[in-house]
Length: 119
Length: 108
Image (cartoon, rainbow over the protein chains, first blue to last red):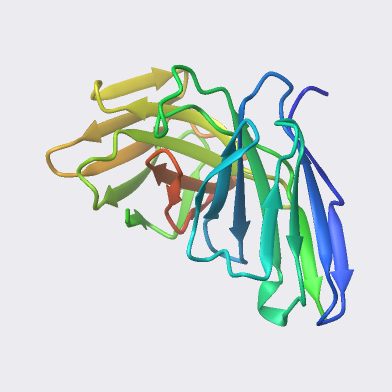
């Protein structure tokens, strides 16, 4: 399968614990995006990388959240001191952006998501 | 930032009929409008997208129209089939501001 993959698919944790999710993009894609989706809503943008550089972060990304893409390939999203309000589906998407333009409208392909439940 | 509104929130159609979903956006600078289909427990799947240099795009039974002056765009599905049942999301802009989704049910 050459699509976007995410691990784990499901995570149940207790409030206050730290969790880390991984996203592997489509292999030749240079951009990687993180979104959060709560029940009955559309996904909300969190952050995105071009290669290893984190170019933009949403106000939704509190200081408990950190994302990395150290080698410009896979990415991790860590949530520290989880709260019940963090329960959601965390989606990763990747795209191939040409020309280096910061806001180019490249097509994004989504992974299956990681469903987080904070008890 | 961009604000995308989507209507209706639910849509039930008879198999073979057409389905239309409409979205409006707020940022006149937005120039990219994809549509995604999401099935239960899965990530969104791109079904069609349109850029602001065209007004309409078709792919078999699916078409999208864009009116930049009015800042709205629509998804049209013709000859609906039961496998078209899913949640459909419109989005705008490079960092994808999504609508709230439309749950489409195709009755056999």
